[in-house]
Length: 240
Image (tube, rainbow, N blue to C red; front, side, top):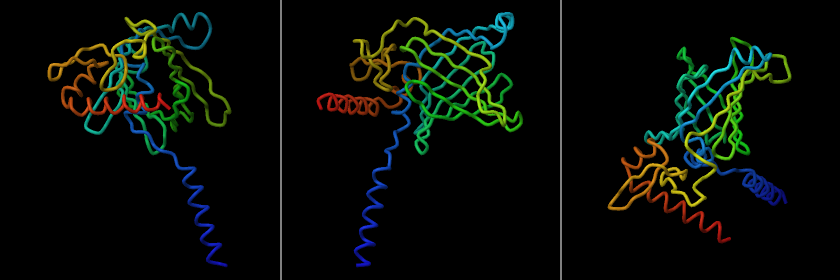
């Protein structure tokens, strides 16, 4: 009887463990959820405050996002031109935590690491600043593929709510409300909107940015194989 109970307990425990186990995404697959970021964006920022403070603190910047491939390391890379608070950044997916890490470099060369989940095209990433004794938050929101904004918020130690410090809104340069699914070329590397032509063995393909262009140039067979597998998987899912 004891052996039966032990065996039953083992089966139940392993069964529940299997139900709770989640399949981690590959970094490249997880980052494709943010493909709309790829491109150049005209942005303007406004601090919180009175009307005069907002007008006085208003600024403009340009943000360029590209894919970055370094061996098995995959990231989205950002360059800020005339950025008030950041000069560059890298966005990675953390499979073990099912979260994203956004590393941003300030004009003073400090690197700030924010981490958090992506839900419904909104990335909410936090970091703890022990010196300032506060939690700092960046919220990045995507809209329709042609607009995105990010806000910076802080929550002092002992406080319950975040307070917004500034907001940056941006519009993608030279792109209407369109995406790969609108009969536009698709990037064979990332699956995003293809803008740049590349050739291999007499065939023409498209990639979305210079990062994908370099990756395709380094190993076209790899990315064409992955692209074919991805399209086959999509077709199979649609047929269900």
